[in-house]
Length: 467
Image (cartoon, rainbow, N blue to C red):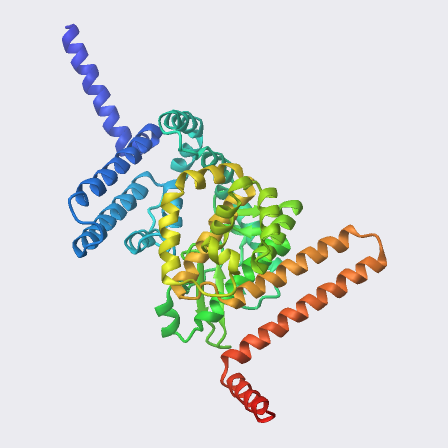
């Protein structure tokens, strides 16, 4: 009798389990240990694949390069499957990696790019379950850190805990959308979807439908007569204004969230900014230090680069910090990042160093202010877009950054000054600096245009005819 009762109880438990699973009340993904276990297993398989597939092949040979490409592709597909299975923050990380064209092998970025527009959807209950498990994740990460001392990603959990609830509040997203639209209203090329408040709640957000091609789709732009350089330049203007002048930054500009479209009526190209759930508000002191650091980087002023990098938490790792911010080699940073475009050899050096300095990179990310983490992510995504459009390291992007930094620092200094004379002096210096930038930009335009070349040839001939 007891055995029969046990069988019936077991059958009832199994039936209940199947019912709950089928009705999504019980899902293996509801357990953090399942997701972490899946991630560990995927990492182990990828590591084993690299070690065994390339072990007996001469390094640098054609066969080695072919096999390495195949392993890259298999590993990227495994990562994509992991992201789709674990969902939540794994999708976010996958989207970020898919945009790092300038840093990761092409097999990875091509495979992970599908997450920008074809990511699996999670229910609100699934996302809230992830938030509830954050404490469990912290314990797991502490255990992992004991096993692997170089593992320094506790900051990632802290940021996810802080940001996920904000991203789930759709009223907050609507307010962010309206705020950034008003803040950047002078940019007529920017379009932000209108919010229909009467039909929106914390769980439902109804907004204007807008469509276009992804901002990294060069073929779409060429097909629709959109100037790639203009789009890259305007995107840089938007983010320079957000970061340096306003300190209110859209921190998820992956290509699925930034669209481009040519207006049939005016013929102008518009940038459409979507997904306003995640913004970073920069403190005034942080924003000023960041402005001055970029001014020093553009001028190749190494003393000030060191000074402001240290103030932003980089410590003795300030050379690595400068390279991470600019995605340039230390040699290029010393020479001046606006002096020359990224070469193929420098590209290879950056990719190699990213892997070689991973422990130092994780240490640096653990030390810098939390405000910097989302800015670094934003920089990576924007640089990935520039790389896809082949517009990286253009002089115009640095000129726009310089303008915004000058305006931001001058406004800060005027607000802190109580002397009318000092305010006038600051305004004059600001106007002079902006005028110098405009003059230099005109020189670059003339240098690159036919008219400019003709003028240079004419002046050169006039110069030689005098001797």
